[in-house]
Image (cartoon, rainbow, N blue to C red; front, side, top):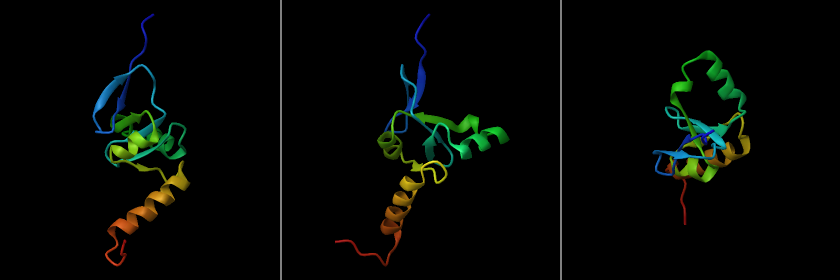
Length: 97
């Protein structure tokens, strides 16, 4: 039986073939990544339409490098860190340095 090939996204957000399945799933349109057992993603899949935009990543650094943000439902701690750092980058009243 031949090995199964999985299509994952790399840090450049381009697909590549892998013999190892991804550890995280994401949504191409919303640019959100999360755990494969995410309740929010499962609900979106059940409603339909979500599957066509589903992507997979080998790990969290790759998902971040590809421009995705953590899911607030299944990765709340990572989401808070992302949200805080996002505000610091975009808030004109915040001075760095």
